[in-house]
Image (cartoon, rainbow, N blue to C red; front, side, top):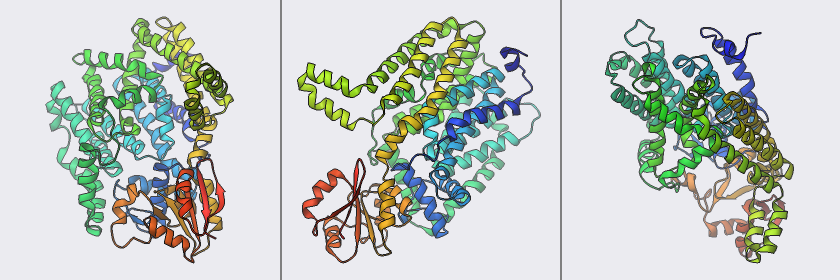
Length: 575
């Protein structure tokens, strides 16, 4: 049997075999238990309900949410989810499948790009790094437009650098057209950044690398024609059908989102530094060294691949760091280039340069051990809180309040996660600078197990506490054809589980734009209108949080009947 080095250095063969094995093995944490969790608002409820309404109404041009127009995102994810529902039914698994598939396809695209740039071993390591970055995998299991965008950008930018390697040589134009194809799909996934990011990254690559001749190779005229042929029809159709679309989508959702706090998502400039460190753990500790090496070797790297990957990661990171609207998934598109850069550095360490990784390995090992100890402490949180309260009585109330609001994770689950962190940390500390292969194997194996355990052991109680599924299904079973179902604020998962339009009162958030188009007052009542409806003859079911019920209770006449309750919400009826 050939040894590992012989296998991974089998340079010209094994493409299909590698990708099949990666898809099967790394696909486990992407798809296992995918439908075992209820949908969580706001993202999952929103991106499941819009395609459900598309199928129900037969309109795939104008997206609606709770049956009012919703123009915050282009339709590609809605179309994919609608197709998934059509094939598999209205299930949580079908709702999440397209996003999870995009996550796995991004890993395979990363393998292809890394193998073209650096070789088979680096490609395998890069795929393993991305597939064992728990933050990447777990976010792919949530219904997000960002994972679809990440796949499209990875395929587009990867096609560009692969095509550019054949500059001046006789080659097929196919990679260039793949680039334009996936740029178009990126636009349909999340708007103008599908063009802005590739254009900016390529511009700085040509500028810093001095490769302006590539402009003559890029099939710009025919490529842009292909891009427009794919991306433009929907924008034209939705604009003709909805004159209000263009101003809202291009001005409000692009320029105002980037330059103002209109969406209430302001975070400091450095927000994504700890986010990246946490979501790409355990590999994030190797990012600084990988970036430094790529910059140092920018003039010596074959075809300057490292410089391109560096620009790809840094430009997107800085763009979103400068934006006044920040959310954790925004930086997902930088995971593939970082995984390749880290893999290339680790590949060199496996050939005897392990000392380059020693400092990062020691810091990582200490961090993982600390996380393991914290996990063990979390498993005994009530007992520790009682001890601290006895020692410091002033902290008694804050400590018990923290326990009441802490995620409901069992002691067994916390202990299992803590054990995996400790194994990783101890192995990394022992192997630092001496045996990088052992360290990589331990990190991959334990991270892989974490990705399998977390959805079952940790996410189940959290999702059950956060999701309105149980009360929504109860309301659906109780509601007659004339019963009004009401929520305080948008809870789109309620619409999805009840499969009907709901009345929304209170702060409208993402429904505010649609609520102002036409006369929607019956579906978006203020408090006084809600109280009048409650006192009327029509049966009503209201899903609201406990604090909202306490505030509203003295105003409700007749007194409400408690129909159901979950850890955070109550279901009340006026009959």
